[in-house]
Length: 195
Image (cartoon, rainbow, N blue to C red):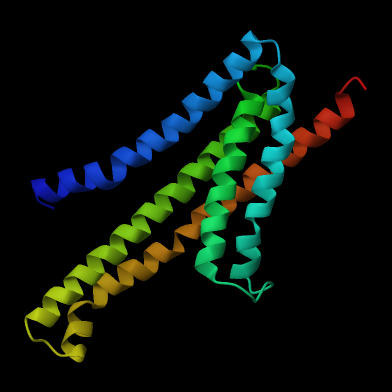
């Protein structure tokens, strides 16, 4: 990779990725501090319920991928998955905020952040590899190669893109850990909360 494409990658994908991820964490911690300063911290605590509901709704995309839901565009469900997941995560982060008690809650929140990180990483890597493959295909077409020759030249690149599509093999187990820890947190709160 030459220096120009490295700068382009940094500017177009990695920098926004880091800014979005750290921005969400910073915003949620700041919002929690403000809620505490104006003595309405209960608002942040209640956002945990709504955030969890939004994250749960984001799994409709998984039902579409498994073909348990047959109607609608998978792309639309993916966008919905991303927006509901991000909004829900933001609310859950504000719910957890600056409270440093409860190991289980912090483990669940850490697992949520790792889940977000794996989802964003997969999205960027897959988009990048598809873009690279498409550009290479166009260049070979311009050279006058026929489809068979192009397919032969792009065999290993295509295989790499197919492999990239399997990044879900990381995202799904991480998500499962997040769900398990979240459920354990909810059960613990229900069991030990002073009603």
